[in-house]
Length: 171
Length: 122
Image 1 (cartoon, each protein chain N blue to C red):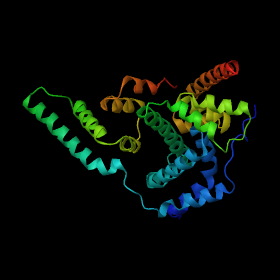
Image 2: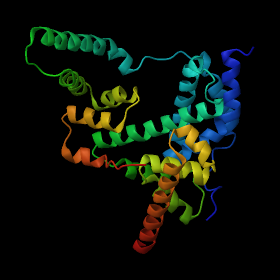
Image 3: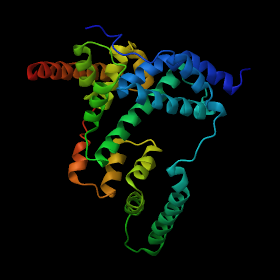
Image 4: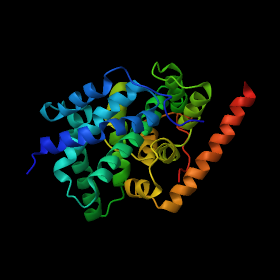
């Protein structure tokens, strides 16, 4: 039987890179993604004894990562509010300043528009558009029905279209 | 628009990340501000229970348990510096409602509250 350390190391090997890309899309910069990933894996390690196997390991790991990402975004709002700033603007500034962003101007505009979406719409959009997860898997991870996820993704797309056309107009 | 290849990582990042993450089980966990103040929170919670229970027994009108709890949170939030406040709320999983309640209890201004810009998500 595998020791908890061996199970944990297996999770790190299997999921760290994929979760990094998810978290990076959620928080907007490499540095924040790196910090948050440490917290996520610390949480996975701490919670590992309570993993009973009712959910698939994959779903359980992703659930911790997405919940932690949402919590990070909420705390970011709080941090920003305590300092009289807007959290969305802070994330957008980080995307602007991120030295590891090497996409086109249009891709940067998309990343900034996604950062302005409400947290859960951002989560669904990131999981569908960039992580390319099927709705059924997103549903298992988030505990939200497939119908609600599709509606949320549709609303997110519409907002992005509107925001992106507005940013084109304002250029 | 292509979906990928617009973001990158420093060279050799993932092998190094894997090493750092695999060191987590050997790491000593530092107590957070919340963990440091949690005995006081537990003490406050037990006082709240006593007061509420006492009021129930003796039929006296008094503040609700929620009011007392938030008074204490308000006291805590005002007694910590901004970084301490953030660390306090960072250590627990918070819902949007809890954040709002915390901020209201901290006597936050309406302008700061407006910056949170909450919307219905799903």
